[in-house]
Amino acid sequence: MLFRLKFDSKAVKKPVISMVTLKTSALVNIIRAEVGPRRGELIVEVDDEVADKVENAFRELGVEVCRLEKKVERSEECVHCGACVSICPVEAIVVEEDGRIEFLDKCVLCGNCVNVCPVRALSLPV
Amino acid sequence: MKGDTAERVKTVAEINEKIREGNVCVVTAEEMKKIVEELGAEKAAEEVDVVTTGTFGAMCSTGVFLNFGHSDPPIRMQKVWLNDVEAYTGIAAVDAYLGATQQSEKSQEYGGAHVIQELVRGEEVELRAVSRGTDCYPEKEVRTVITLEDLNFAEMVNPRNAYQRYNAATNSSSRVLRTYMGTLLPNFGNVSFAGCGEISPLINDPDFRTIGVGTRIFLCGAKGFVVGHGTQHCPGYATLMVKGPLKEMKPEFMRAAYMPGYGVTMFVGIGVPIPVLDVEMARALAVRDEDIKTKIIDFGIQRRDRPVIREVTYAELKSGKVEINGEEVRVSPLSSVYLARRVMEELREMILRGDFLLTEPVERLKEGEPMKPLRVATKLVKSVMNKAVTVSPETDVRTAARLMIEKGLNHLPVVDGEGRLVGIITSWDIAKAVASGKTGRVGEIMTRKVITTHPNEAVEVAARKMESYDISALPVVDGSGKVLGIVTSEDLSKLLVR
Ligand code: SF4
Ligand code: SF4
View 1 (cartoon, rainbow over the protein chains, first blue to last red):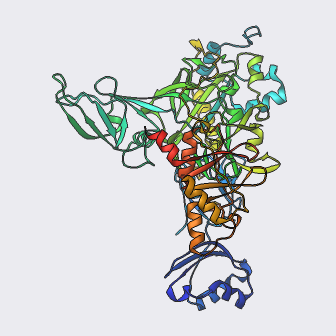
View 2: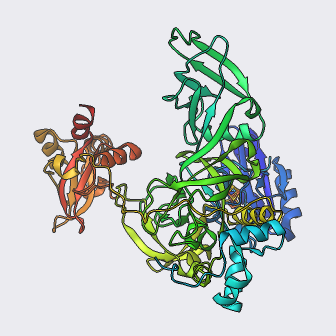
View 3: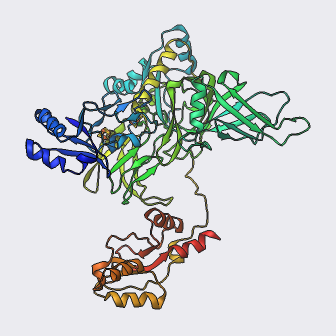
């Protein structure tokens, strides 16, 4: 399960990830991080079984949690060229038998493919 | 010529007769390969009349001739822009050629390809033209909005499309490269390849027996023609010059694109019907990805003659992984096999409907000749490099500082006992060291990861390296890492500014 975490100036000063890990003893894998002086945004991955527990722990620390059930979004413009395939760090983009390019659920929303698509067919869900 | 001696099974005229009567047998290139495998070439040649081949890939050498019609008062358009993309007007008064890769003056991600796409999608495009005015064409400026409907004439004419095969690309350098072959990750991080392999038109007619001047083809959904061989048509890498009416094209068989960091290009869908005239043709049509070889080229070396990393077949490339230096590397295609299949299917449907007749070439394509390079006087690093003053990691920082001041240098390559590069120090490193009271040995403050050049690298490439790493000197090393000299940005700017 992927979470998008947003935190404000109060929460940003606390070591939230470590605190949550200690409290829930769940592993929190950081996929993407943008932390500024006053605000921060993280995308983290946790095991599905502990998702509820971890979500609550973050909320208690004043972190805004949003579940990312989706993967990278693709528009009709896609021509199935495959330029994105070898760019994906987790091999979530595959060539199907019929030549179609498919995106698997294991996408971690890193955004790498978004920047290489020649027809700008890809975007990260907001 | 091969094949001329083989017994003819049928002629193009006979096949067209069957198309008119509605009893023609048309299969796609993929189906044909299975048929030959199962029934043999003889039987396949008897059964199958036409094989549709196809490709759908980024083809930079694409564009349209447009005729805008005359305004009142008339203008002789000397410069023309369509949605701020300039078209070539060095032809008659209201004719222009809009190239797919021409960039907009407003945005680098928008270009000729996008204008062409918008025209085909029925959208409005802004036309702007200027002229100095003549007695017969007094108007000096025109600004209006046009659609494809409004144009008298709009013909796609592409000087080089449908490559028979194409080199694959990888990147040995330590930087991400943004190229016309897509984004290439550093240290052989990926491979990308273009072309559709065994279903591509020219790979299925390697002796150009049926694809020639005047061959009717499928071009972006319209019926077009082969004009002749394309530019850069050479053995094994044949190309076609093609044309077709823009007004009959379908948006789903073309797509404007922007190769990130490189520029605008256009995906073009081309289908070519190949008549199965005899057994020889059936055999050629059985070609498989396993049989089609190409090369993986290293884009990390920015020279015309980029090193070949290895030979590879389209079967390996399409498998998604290839081996380079003992490691598995992931592969991206750049051409769409999925849409190439749609092209082949659509062309088959057109033929079955009696809507598309085959032609015999008016003239055969040439064999093609090896490419002649453009000779430009390239200056190599060895002609501009200077002798490097080097120090060892053991050298005292103060001694190094003194050396720099005495010789008026800002960079000292650091070498081991055998003269091999192990680091570099700059006057800035020394200033920092002194400021923080670290005045021990050079080895403690040097930069270990050094960007280098070699004697036979073009000075432009060396200059680009300095620019992209934001550094001002490059040690020149040989294959074993021995320092031969140094080039600085001052040396190069003297040369390049002239
Ligand atoms: S790079 Fe873009 S167009 Fe090509 S397959 Fe991926 S999403 Fe589709
Ligand atoms: S966003 Fe990242 S993980 Fe998801 S498909 Fe694209 S490259 Fe792969």
